[in-house]
Amino acid sequence: MFLGRGIKVVVKLKICGLKRTQDIEVVNKFKPEYIGFILAPSKRQINLVKASYLKGLLDPQIRVVGVFVNEPLESLVHYIDQGVIDNVQLHGDEDLGYIKALKKKRQIPIIKAIRLNNQELLSDTEKAIIESDFIDYPLLDTYTKDAYGGSGKSFDWKILEQIKRPYFLAGGINKVNIKEAISFGPYAIDISSGVETEGVKDAVKIRELFEIIRDEARK
Image 1 (cartoon, rainbow, N blue to C red):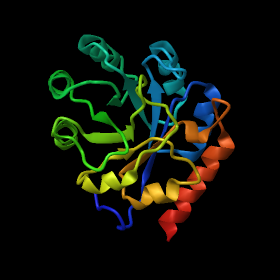
Image 2 (cartoon, one colour):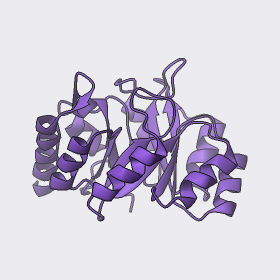
Image 3 (tube, rainbow, N blue to C red):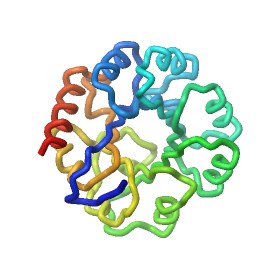
Image 4 (tube, rainbow, N blue to C red):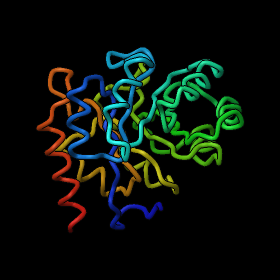
């Protein structure tokens, strides 16, 4: 349930861009609610065979999010039908027509990324997607020219006060600013580069992040 800024919530965590068996071992220890496999062109991309293997090692309580960018609809349906992913994250230019068609074909939870500049207001198109009943959660990320994510940079979070439904928050979140991120009342925090060292998931950084979230929940 969305409660808004200043209301105490226990934020959920998604660690995105897992690629190695060592990554799975770490998340199995700390048990974030979600992990993400990048199935789109990216330095963190893995293929379906690797994703299936890693899921076989994953604690079944952790939900797998498959991240896609402008994937042809029938191809995405094929991915879903393999039983590897529990949620779909659309991180490209997918419009409401695409989202509606996907929801009609498969009843899988949909997370739709909205990439924001340091703007003061949401556009009408952004509002329409965020408020759509055809998505389960919007994901607010930082706009980066010529890229669909993974910038490691944050945007002006004040715009989050305009969002009145549960959402994922991504973009440049790390142990330094996660307390501020949590204060806006997101449903979940989505982190990738913030728990990496030299492009590899870092068990120490993941542990530090969980300790901060745990301590914030106790306050």
